[in-house]
Image (tube, rainbow, N blue to C red; front, side):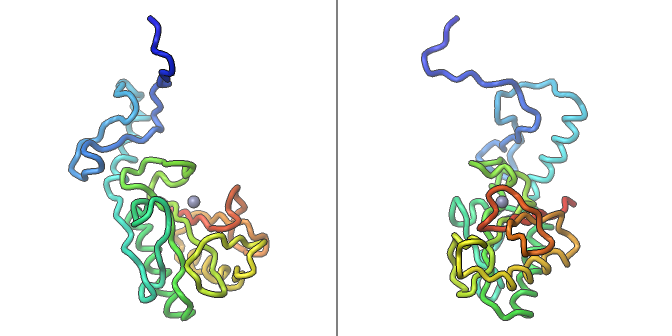
Length: 205
Ligand SMILES: [Zn+2]
């Protein structure tokens, strides 16, 4: 049998590939395999998968922030489509944002991509498939709600305030790690492509 030109043959079933709910993200929908519907996975894989599915079902959308909330929203796709998070992650964001507002009096900080509603990894955002990885913009001296604030090239970058924000996240005791590449900021790890944003990973409940 020969396949029509240009046809891609799907590779085998990957147990780590998340599934999508029927009905395009409908909470009540049954969960199905996104790839090819094959069955017969090993039981340990199934268990790990069941836990993942249970977590996806808990994803909640981060509320639109403003100056009174202490954070603002950005990210792709826009309008919060990629701001679905586990309740624990939302709690951490909201707690830190309140403290940021009350203790620093600074303009809100930017919260970007977390996860899609399905928990499905998208684009290059492999770290954004489970509702606990949160992109945060470095703090700017001018308080502008824009991107491109690279620690090493952008004079608007505010290292001192960014450090303060990092400490606030760490102080919650609920952060697994923070990626950011400014070597002068403490409490962070260097990760590829993290010169202009922080990636805060919350401990899984
Ligand atoms: Zn990220």
